[in-house]
Amino acid sequence: MGAQLIRRTTHSLALTPAGHAALADARVLIADWSAFEERHAALGDAVRGPLKVVAPVALGQTHLVDMAARFLIDHPDVTLEWELEDDPIRFAERGCDCWIKIGPVPDDTLVVRTMGRVERLIVSAPDLLRRSLKDPRELEAVPFIALAPFEGGSLTLTNHEGATVSLTLRPRMTTNNIVSILRAVRLGAGAAVMPTWFVAQDLNDGQLVDVLPGWRARDLSINAAFLPARNQPKRLEAFLQFLGTGVRAMPGVTSDT
Image 1 (tube, one colour):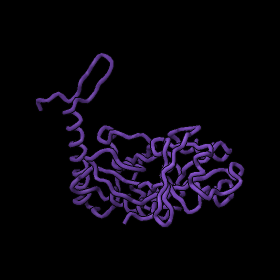
Image 2 (cartoon, rainbow, N blue to C red):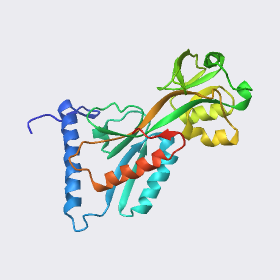
Image 3 (cartoon, helix red, strand yellow):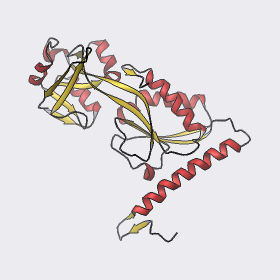
Image 4 (cartoon, rainbow, N blue to C red):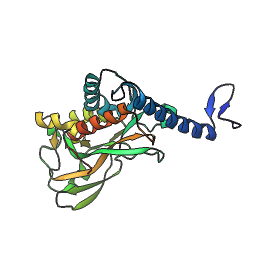
């Protein structure tokens, strides 16, 4: 094509800017061709073929993988490559069909479909505070564990009447792994902002308590991102619809529509 797509050194291969652009365009062409094959094959209405999905770690090994397994049971001619990743990915290089991301998708070349919004609340072990807080500002004196990149030294809470309060926190622990936070909170190391879907059972069992009833941290969207192919393969569209229904049924998730 008269353009350098790959830059090679003695130690590595890397795509050039032209290579990145060509790869993204190639992924779109492949998706369009897959949809063409489906439409004109003898079994044109069948949902079949491979899917590669990248999902967030905690959600991808709990609720979402249950949905994915049920989808495979319903569609035995579909195969699934299921990868878990919390960090941003280079979609074109990863070669996936769908990227499920909590929070904004930092890639404006992708189509983003919001499947639901996640309620988040402040939780702690029962013995940490002995009581629920009345004033959100009391949280500033409580040991706090922060989930990067969503929380850090500041936190904004909103109540049911729409009032907001901004807090300055000094986290005693910061991590990018929500499972680690849950274990630390259960042991009483601090309070933390957690999604309702992740702690619903702990709240029901009394292992955790809602520290500030009526106050919530800003919600986060659960997004599905994919390439803007003219015609999506039936298997991807069927999977997205199935996933959307399942996500909206999760505890503490509301529809974005």
